[in-house]
Length: 140
Image (cartoon, rainbow, N blue to C red; front, side, top):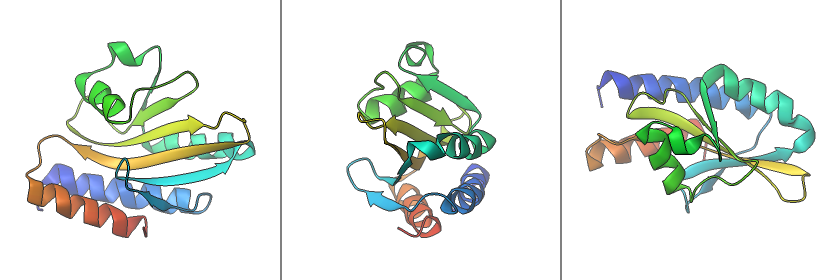
């Protein structure tokens, strides 16, 4: 997997995992093939600050309909965005990116985030390798 965009994704994932690992414990979410972490809503600003440092575009349930194709594709994969949910991306202009789904709980006490790399142009073998590397970085 010597493809430069993939190596860049791996590097960005490593830094993101390190920064968030100080706040969030990760598990594997097989339903969406993402790392999932949850935290108290009181940590909202701290976590969002870390995410916004690494993920430069943010979409919500109102703006996603006008988003680039890759954003809409990720949103669809996750079942769409409901009010209060966010989708953050490292670069919404690229087919290869990192995304984070921000899902507040109905009770308001906790927030879940789901993070994964996304690439529409990888061969199956490379996609499998990227997922394995991603899981290793997040220790899940």
